[in-house]
Amino acid sequence: IRVLLTGAGTGSSGNVVRALRAMQPVPYIVGVHSDRFTLRQSLADRSYLCPPYGASEFVDAALDIVRQQRINVVMPGDDDAVKALSDHRRRFPMPLFLPSRGTIDLCQDKYALSVFLGRRGIPVPLTYAVRSLGDLERIFARFSREGLLWCRARRGSRSVAATPVATVEQA
Image (tube, rainbow, N blue to C red; front, side, top):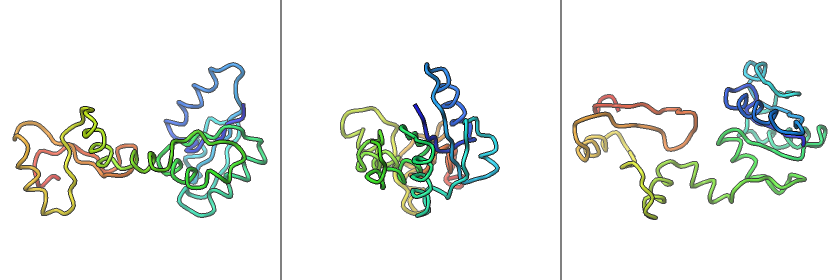
């Protein structure tokens, strides 16, 4: 097994590398990242600096690495890599084990996913979309005054723009 792992050098990719190395036979792991400083921390057998996932050159670079390194499994490590690879899945010489584009879009929008799950009877936290700062007073009025509320961006991973708040001003 020859694996291409995106996000090489991050903490989560290190966990994946350690898990893969517990397999028998141990796979050969190739890591990629667009940040040379993060990439220096990669635990992969071989690491490549590549364009950012959102750049049009990323998929071409990934395909070159797949061919050169005879990769047969691609493991994206975060939302941006999943989106980039999914958008170009037909260009890869092997199947990419990714859900449908619609499922990816849904799962990458935290609010839309919460609404989707809630409508199907799956318990989710009470969630409101904030479309403008003027919405905050009205939204806060729907909650009890005890405890904290959790504000987060609709998109993104690794808790980017996520924080507990107690007041409208903090939000």
